[in-house]
Length: 204
Image (cartoon, rainbow, N blue to C red; front, side):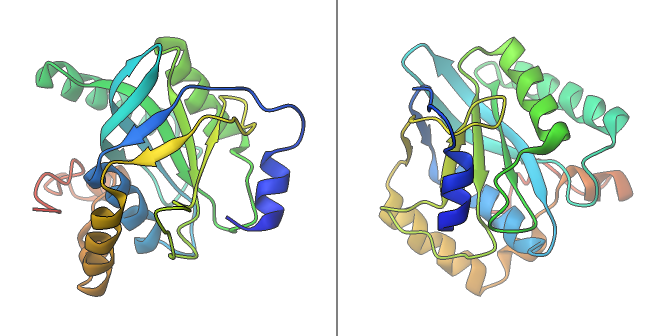
């Protein structure tokens, strides 16, 4: 993230937060979502497991790219996500991610904060991640992610990707072959219910 972005997100005293580890596919889906809509803000849900000592994100569900102010649609998406987690028998809603339209914009905004706080009310350790998909040059040392609290303030919580080197190499391959153009978010699913916003086979 840009220097201005880091300064803005880091204003004031930073909370500790809990460590966040992402599986490769979860990390890739977040960035593919941002890269599909590089001129728009995007957001989504983090699924996985959470404990007092950290959050493990195994999957993500991309939400919106057209508007962040559709409360009825958000409630529908959260209900479907909850049903998906229950049917899996092992997943839970463990966080929220967002990429803003401008790379120097580190504000979650009222809608992003609302979602983050709603998820945090159900999962005390829930992760909130802000990513920069506008400059798609992540490295193992700079994953282009900021960990925030539910109020949008940066935390000191470490964020890692399991097997980051291989994941970033594979992500680069997906971008070269246009996999991001095939990603479906909840917005697209609302337009065509046949489209799979769980992206079950996208990275196979």
